[in-house]
Image (cartoon, rainbow, N blue to C red; front, top):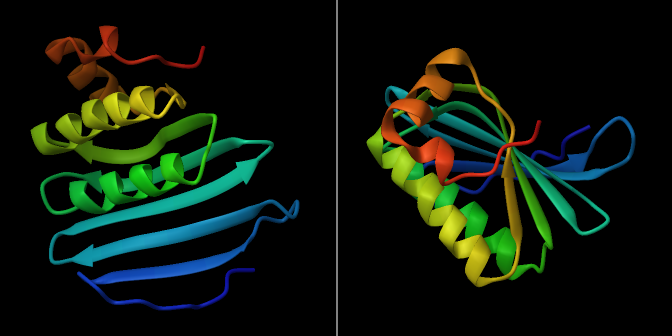
Length: 137
């Protein structure tokens, strides 16, 4: 069940709750015309998983980077970005991912990514980003 706590700076809705197994989670949704990014966050034993759904692009990259900064500042030792539901990423989104990697390294937080959809994996391969990011097997 997700608590419906709504905050609207920069068209953001936010909520807190738990998963069916009782793991705390935070859900943020950036809602702007033609752009939507939903972030599902869960934390267990110092490891945070941030699941991205929708589009990571110019309109949503700032919200993503703010979430990464908050997670690292909260002291996560490991951050897993679940890209399985990410449907689109542009150059701004890719830059945000690479900045997230640098931010995590600076704060001694291990950053790992899950493989995304074929078009997302192709972007990483074409740009060379795949060699700069660590992916779970």
